[in-house]
Length: 489
Ligand SMILES: [Zn+2]
Image 1 (cartoon, rainbow, N blue to C red):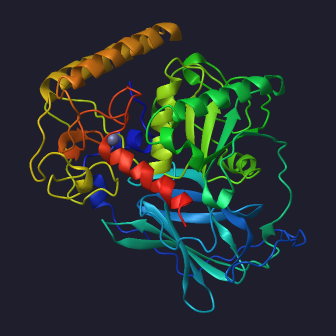
Image 2: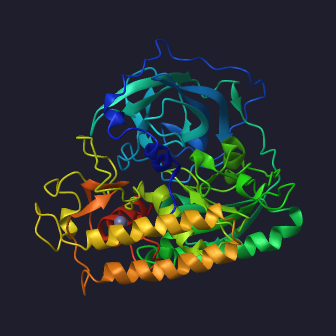
Image 3: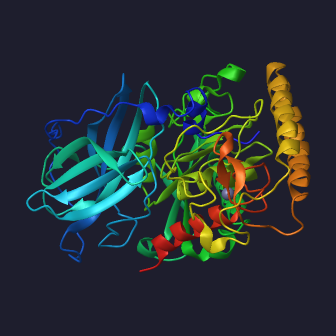
């Protein structure tokens, strides 16, 4: 079965359309002041090239809490990272994805210095939940006001939390990384400022498994660059393996009764699904990643049982020893880099139907064939849904989900599940290929967890089925745009 993001998993257990009914979140009245660190300030020395930003990056380790309709981010640590992986001055407005955004304003004036969308591991429509998350920006030279807002409509953001930060403050942790790391440059295309910097990290590798980690990281990179639009843009990437040893081999998996002590505390069952793995110690993950310049993180769980998870601008986590690891790497990393929604859904008696009326920010799904999303790549008429064998596919896919769940309920060996999924991958590909001898780009109903009321751009895509051959036109366009945003001046 295709993997769920943590967010889409949580969405499945909430009422359809609930996000639109949530009460507005309470705004924090006063900016939070932070304190607690007394280490001497020693900014890295480098030539002053930008009037607003100094070398290095400032990371905010945050606690994201949703309780009873109230939502807030609280600051747990201010952390100096050695490098900012993008150009300076930064793009003030990057691609506008994510359920949240962070804005950085000059505290003295009111100039906008930086703005970026992001997601966290929580469903934005959750009723009560908490998680760690981190946001970063280049190290400001003067005091700044950091505002975090939540998306409340297509282009409306409501304030959630505000912090005032003085870059000269002793509250900023400037100590060296406490977790020992080893870095392997797997592919270097150029300087960090003009490349997409991918950090591949491992969880559940013991010190003695360092060589396996490096081999796994090379394998993961080869999967990613086996498919367009990554394939022809490999030269736009820097790929580095960052190894940090875990006490135990493997990761925590309640399904198998495994409880492991690992560096990022990754575990299956994140979001309640047996096939979702996520890190639990996000700050440790960020610490290890900060050993290198990084824009994106791919985390290899040293485990075989099928699973993964990802969210926009967060880590993509995959079970690297599963037979479907190629699919997991490509699919999950696409969530992280492109803010892409899952395009699949689990069919149920004519539904589920999407009940909301606000156009989702996800760039690869839309509420209407009139929306104009991906219009530059259309080959079919706008305004008219494309035809595809939805009835046949839904019938097949509902059966597939039941067969998968029966295998898990019976506790069969992973090898049996792997063989089953490979057969099903071939069946899915054959079924979807019936639609077109050549690919057609239009508006196909069924996406983002819903059979009705929401559309994707092609009959098939790596975000829709288990294939690893191609992304649909909408997904390809977004991935290209995100890569270009890091590469082009
Ligand atoms: Zn797609």
